[in-house]
Length: 200
Image (cartoon, rainbow, N blue to C red; front, side, top):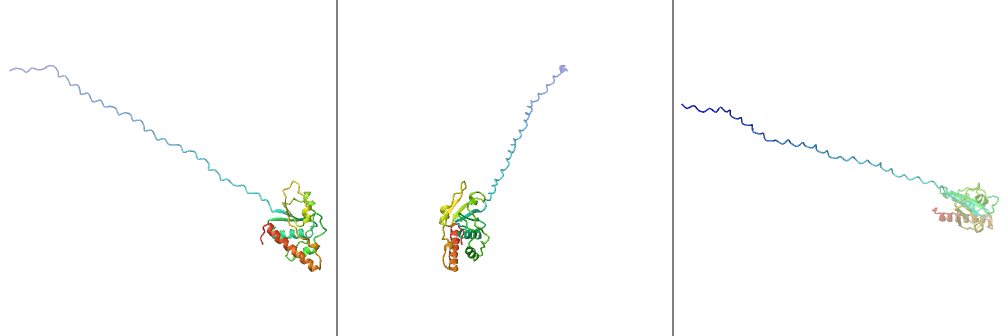
């Protein structure tokens, strides 16, 4: 019986199969955080412009001028004050002022419920000298006063000539004279309303 050869050499241990190299997963770069734009600083809302209130200029000062400041200019002063005291400051003066207001001028104005009995003749010099505030407008109600009306030096004064007949020169009875005063009164009222845009 033939002995089988016994291979005394130990069997070489099989080298373990090299494990396939497993590439380490690349370290993921941390995802970039989306850039968040800082909110733009809000500019403070512009405050609405507030217009400064217009300064009140006050009523225009109108000076009625005639020679004696006893009839026409006195009636004009009273009429304007009655019609538009909220728009105009009404004044009167004379180049050669009389001693008092003509009683017939007072009477016919009273018929319109306008009392001018407390008004007094004044000299234009009061306004020229600065003792009284200078007027904005000078309205001469007689031709002579218009010719004699002096300039208001350094003042921005408008001049207007609206001549009327002098009722004090009327002749006849008292009633006839009163009628002349009424005519001049009514002409003054109508003319002032038209010239100054005062309506009816």
